[in-house]
Amino acid sequence: MSASDDVREVMIIGSGPAGLTAALYTARASLNPLLVEGLEAGGQLMLTTMVENFPGFRDGIMGPDLMGEMRAQAERFGAEIIQGDVTAVDLRERPFRVTIGAKQWRTRALIIATGASARMLGLPSEKALMGRGVSTCATCDGYFFRNLEIAVVGGGDSAMEEAVFLTRFASKVYLIHRRKELRASKIMQEKALANEKIAWIWNSEVEEIKDAGNGQVTAVVVRDRDTAVRSEVPVSGVFVAIGHRPNTSLFTGQVAMDANGYIKTGEGSRTNVPGVFACGDVQDHVYRQAITAAGSGCMAAIDAERYLENLAHAEASASAERSVT
Ligand code: NAP
Image (cartoon, rainbow, N blue to C red):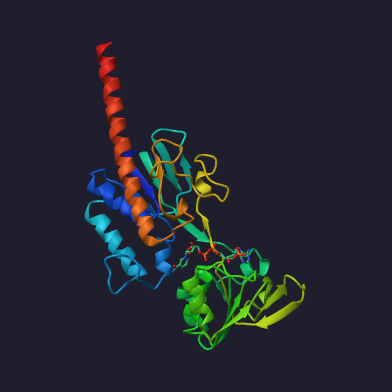
């Protein structure tokens, strides 16, 4: 394993709106940030089409274009961006150690912006058919289901959004929800309920996705939670839209997290480990917006900058004291 002698002031893990905003601010503060962009570079906005609620874009902007702009802006001020999935992080050592495969970096401050990933139902058939008719991204895969009947699972805003979007392609979208009421916001519910191409399957759980044996989706088996009656709904695709899980496994046991694995931040973006900051969806299960992620990335950068300033001050005082004694 090659250990780099290069000790960075600040490293950022994650390249969604939070990570890239943190990179922009720390670069402009002359901290020479190193940002590690994972395999899903750009984060969840890369899976989106039009973003209409990011201030400053009156006519909206495509998600990947917005991320491209943010990336270029951070690079313009000198942020260094490298590709690779971080395989280990050691926060017990100082400077902290960050490992990517056979390479290692050390950093005085770390900003965690690893985001969140789609939750899955946990069915073996779902796993077997992932990418073969099972998807978590309507904007990525909707096109493949032109004039076909498909299902969306979930009852939150994501499920409503995906179902409505998919009616552009599919001839019919079954919305399968495990309860009798939706969790989604009123405006999103109304949009979905008014869409005639959406058929509702309430109070039902997906038990199986067929046909794993043939390597393609042909139907979902749903079970009514009150009557336990099973029925088979013929579909060509299944979109799972049941929420997200924070990407925090790298930090388990090293940073305080809540019961759902989201990193706990106290004042601003500070975690319980001095010098480690968290921003974006990895610490936010409430707002989860591009603009709030970007805002929290800015907070993390400013918090890291102040931390490093205090650290440098403390080190200078300690060394002055040593030279006097
Ligand atoms: P969510 O609000 O947590 O909803 C998840 C849905 O999936 C719930 O209806 C839940 O059912 C269902 N579910 C969870 N686990 C399940 C399982 N194992 N089997 C079957 N169903 C399951 O997640 P989300 O819809 O992804 O939204 C997350 C956040 O992003 C929310 O704050 C939302 O407002 C926001 N968002 C906003 C927009 C927008 O404004 N354009 C778009 C997307 C998301 P229960 O209801 O029974 O718990």
